[in-house]
Image (cartoon, rainbow, N blue to C red):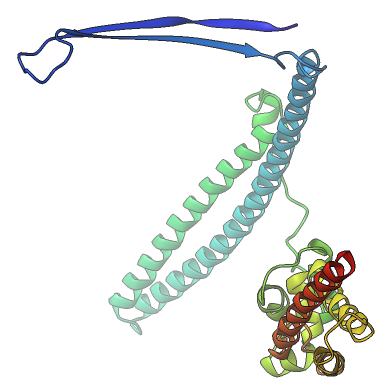
Length: 328
């Protein structure tokens, strides 16, 4: 179905006059007519228009599922946090009770010594002040315990103000334990994990080894012995980078080899082609042995590739000359 839409036109008529003698037409009338026309050829084309409501409903269902999962995770996390806050509050109350017991005993002992005349009144006053401070800390700790207990009741009960719930004391049974020590992954595991995340395109020049693998190596000495240019190239460039380089070098070597056997090549270019083929082979072997094929490619590659282009142009020129000679 084609839908056509014609935009309203625009008619502009301007009349001007001047007292100049140089104007050939006076007065002058300039008219402009503008008409717009548009035609939507693919409007409503395909099944996407009719199935958009189905896709919207599926997306809304996914959003609802994720919202429910987020709500469940948040509720569970808040409940666990409230439980451990109550554990801490109960332990803090016990500590403050023990501190107040010690302060009470110290105050009683100092008071007995004051009555016996073996202690100054200032020491008794100091002990009394410490006892009052510990009693205040105990009251604050008990208040915090009641608040944390009420927060936990709000999370695990439907009606935390019910009579049979308000009077219930929550006694925590689980105690905090020291978390197990997490060991850093080994060098090989970190390389496998980093390569598995971006196997095809890598992380960019020197980014894979420097920012992904090196943080897991304890010392720079171990890093220099663990990392190699092959590993750097694999992490930095992925699979496509070394593959493109190998394909380019193979194509260059094959072209030089074919050039040495081509009978249309100039006599002076044939020895150079053989020499460049040998040089390219030596550079490739040396670069693979020294692990510099990707990370630090020698500049001689550019020389060889430039000579290949020169030989290619000579070969094209020779073929054109032979074609012209045959046609004539």
